[in-house]
Each structure stands twice: as C-alpha cells, then as structure tokens.
Image 1: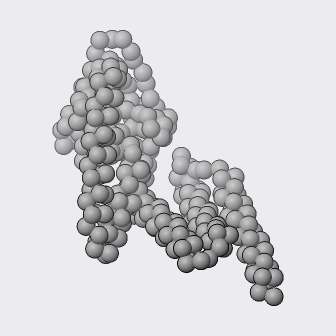
Image 2 (image 1 turned 90 degrees about the horizontal axis):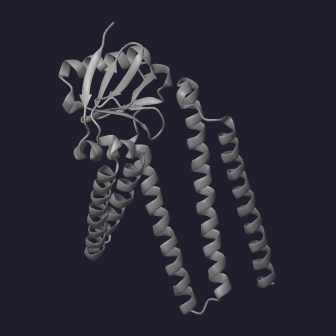
Image 3 (image 1 turned 135 degrees about the vertical axis):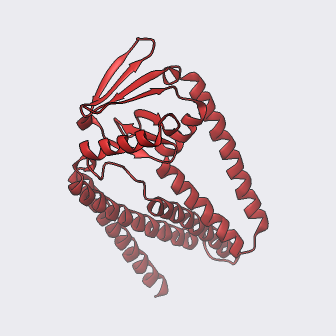
Length: 272
C-alpha cells in the first residue's frame, strides 16, 4: 500500500498562503470592485480619486497582514509539529509530541484546494488539513495528486472562478456608482426647484430596479449551483434555495410593477 509521509510545521508564510487560498472568493470580488473603480477614475481623469483608492488598498493590505500575524501567534495548535501519513485509506494525522491523533477518510473530505504553495484538504468549507508544498518533493506532489484523483475523482480539486467573483465585485461597484449618481441628480433637481417628493420617488424607483436586477442575478447563480451539484454531489445545494431565489425575484418584479402603476396613476392625476 502506497504511503506518503510528511512532517509538517506551519510557519507564518504558510498561514498567509492559506488565508489567500481559503478566501479566494472574497479576494476576487475585492479585486473586481477596486480595479473597476480605478478604471472608472482613469476614464474621468480623476487623479485624486485614484490616489484615494490606492491609499485605501494599502491600508487594507497592512491591516490584513497584521491581522494574519496576530491570528498565527495566538493559535498554538496550528504551530504544533505533526506527521501526515497519506494512504489509500485516508489521512492519518499524529502530533510529534503524541498529544493527539486523528484519521480522515477520503469520503469524509469536502474537497481539495491547491495552488503553487500548498495543498488544502477540506473537511469543511473553511477547515481542514494544510500541507505546504515546500515540504514535499516533486515526486511526492505528483503521487499525492494521483491519490486524490484516484480516491475522490478527477474533479476533486475545487477551483474558484476568478471571472465570476470578479464580475460580482464590478457589479457592486457599478451599483455604488449608480446610487451615488442618483443622489447627486436628486440634489441637483432639488436645487433646480423640483419637489422633494419627486426626487425621492425617482430614487426609490432606481433602488427597486437595482434590487430586482440583483435578485435576478442571484436566481441565475443558484440555478447554476444546483446544476453543478447534480454533476458533483458533494457540492449540491438544496432545490429549495433555487425556489427561494425565484420567489424573491418574482416578488421584486411584482413590487416594482405595483410601484410603477401607482406612480403612473399619480402622474396622470397631477397632469389632469
């Protein structure tokens, strides 16, 4: 029986790589949001806006590094030296000091994530076993990936879609820009003599349209997730999630329809 032995002691750099790997969705959305914001400021030739965004990014990066360092220092369990024995039966984890021992079967794994720095065996969405690739030889990496494919499937490696979550970040930025523009237009109309009621009505209409669009996008995403789960059962979501997203989308369509009807009736009455 093929066995791969790995002695693991995590360092700060491993914790940093793990943070990036386990938070890819948020990071890609974050990149999409700020990249689209920078491009938008370049298009309108707003140098001060670009400088402000870059300053925020630098502050967030510093905060992230300080926070990761604090978490690493406070978590003594993750800094213990452990031995991983990976076989066709699963993964056995034994601490060098003999204080703990555990076994994880292949069918108990949620999935596997990897990048150029580490392999992350997921026992849950944000928990699992970390093996830095710096502790493995090229041959061990190849054998380990072969074991994963043999016992989980060729699709066991979970990949985060950069374009999907980057696009979500771009949409959030566009929503922020639209709302900001709507507020500016409302303020301008008030200064031009329009009534407060008229400006508020326009703003409410715009917000309802954004919410309807968002609920429609959510419904489409849930449909794709459900279909994806039919191919990979480990990642299946309940069909009730799809129905809830559909009902939310229908409700928003009804709300915006009723709102438009009453606004139209009020406009007709005011016109007459």
